[in-house]
Image (cartoon, rainbow over all chains, first blue to last red; front, side, top):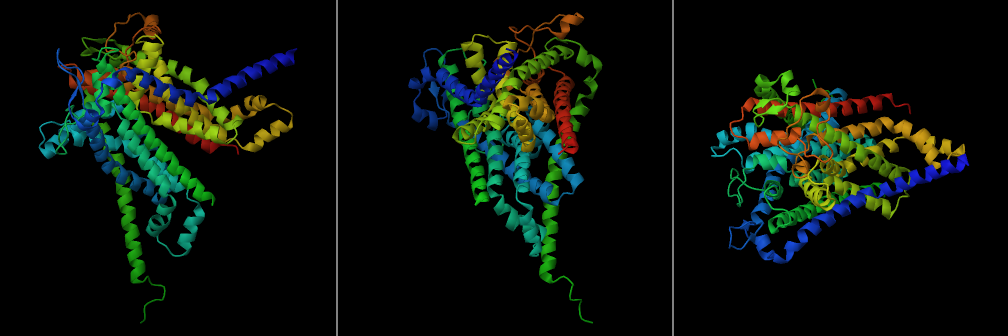
Amino acid sequence: MNLSRARIGERLIEAFIFLSGWSAIFGMAAITLFLLREAAPVVPRIDWHEFFTSTRWIPAPARGNEPHYGALALIVGTLTTTLVAMLVAVPTGLAAAVYISEFAGRRAREFFKVTIELLAAVPSVVWGFIGLMLVGPVVSEVTGAPLGTNLLTGGLVLGLMSAPVIVSIAEDALRAVPDSYREAALALGASRWELVHRVLFPAARNGLLAACLLGLGRAVGETMAVLLATGHANQIPHSLVDPVRTLTAAIAAELGEAPRGGDHYRALFVLGVVLLVFTFALNLAAELVVKGVRRRGRS
Amino acid sequence: MSPSPFAPTAHERHKEAVTARAHAVTLAATVALSLVVVALFVTLVVRAAPALSGALLWENPADKGKAGGLWAPLIGTVWLVVLSVLLVTPVGVAAAIYLNEYARPGPTTRVISLAVTSLAGVPSIVHALFGLGAFVLFAGLGASLQAAACTIAVMNLPVVIASAREALGSVPHAFREACWNLGASRWHTLRTVVLPNSLGGILTGVIFAVSRAAGETAPILFTGAVFFRAIPDGVPARLAPYGLDDPFMALAMHLHVIATQVSQMPPERTYATAVVLVTLVLLINSVAVVSRLRLRKHRKW
């Protein structure tokens, strides 16, 4: 009797474990479904050609006027801030990963790893605040731009935020190269740099690429930092110090004012779907790239 | 006198010079990254200094945050974190147990792993849209503490799954085999052998989730956080001022609003709010970092 009750308890717990095993799939499916559900009613009213080629984003027009859903400036805003961020984060991040993995002594490695890990934990609203109050004024002083909140400021802050992601994943990728590779290269008389450049880079190529893709994903999806630091102008930037607006910032800035269930509200969900598709593609690419590493490693 | 046969050749000297340069450049990148950040945070603290005091933590905000302290948003953040972690931990740990202990490697496990990494890559503003559509409107929770906690819980699910899976994976397989050989069932083995040996690692992951939940802004903007809500001043009521159905104040939201929407905000108060938020998040995070380092050092196998 006692035994069977224990068995029932065990079955229940195992049922919970099996159900939870699928929770990530449920979560991903629910996010996709709810975004599509909220976005769907406005979709027939969106001119897709306009969506991707026009910068006229007027989702809540004055009475009597037609709304326009041209998201080009927002998409370009996201791409340009991300590009600036990657120009900062990829070289710095990869160099730091090489130093921490290959040149640093044990103590220096632990110190920098912890520092960079803490860096990754700083909340994004604080990064936005730093961009607004500290980086912005410096940028506007150096470049003579009228506003401190612009493409360059947003990109720099995003770069600082993405660098830790790149460092930690790239460092893992370099560490994952078997030591026998290092020993073989050194035995052939390679210098440390030759080892890094001729042996480790090719061997860890996919992992390094995945690190960059995941850093890119973080920059594309970042919201609060760009909301505070890029200056909100729905335009295609013509210089590094023009203010821009990104997809994420547009959603965060407009969702509060858009009446629930209205076309404007639903159009913001359409932007959300675009973002979701974009980041999912980046993650999938990173995943496939890493899979490539494993397959080659086995052969 | 002829040169020593072991003296470096020009080629070798060149190689060493290139290596030295690479060492210097990569070191410079690492130090620059750390220094920029240290400089930014020192500036934050220096500018916040005039407003930092014990009263800042203990008093409730008044006059749109221009006076008083940060107690109401601080306790709101604490409750948000506690609720979301209570929601996500059982599911996340069970999912990790499923992936690591029950599932056979195959297409299903691969799809689940892909779902975990994809979920981790979903932008925070998309989580906000999801929370608004699913919890606030569809489930009818309204903009409330519980809706925000659910949204943050979904966001932290992959964090908890990934770290718990790593913790379970670090328990040697021989431990399980030994237990099975004594006739124990799978669940019994888990409960008495695997979980006790991976508890530290699982807790570390949960602490990471806590620190992330404390700092997030976008997912709570539209799901329940508000800029101002009067809360009672008496001592027991101060500790639990918000009901599950109530909108609540949160530190990250507070910083966002006073930094962008309140005119004539004394700047040192905004800096002080940022410092309190960063300190809170980094303190929680360093607990996790230190506990992980200790775990690695004290591992028995």
